[in-house]
Length: 60
Image 1 (cartoon, helix red, strand yellow):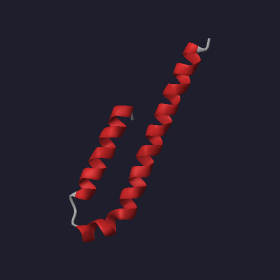
Image 2 (cartoon, one colour):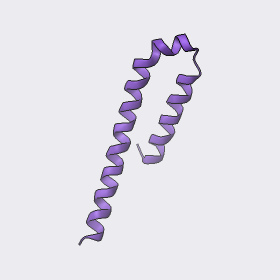
Image 3 (cartoon, one colour):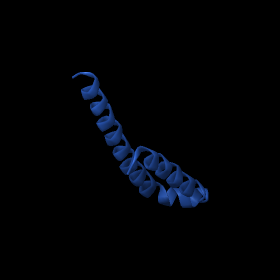
């Protein structure tokens, strides 16, 4: 998953979650948070790899 795909996935999952009624959201909250954290962790990993590559590139 690329950085752009991760951002789109976060937006999509939030939009889907918010499309439910407040009572449905309470039931879906744990699932929503778990999926969101999974995507955010992947996004953080991608950003860390990108930063590491740039660091290595400029510090040769």
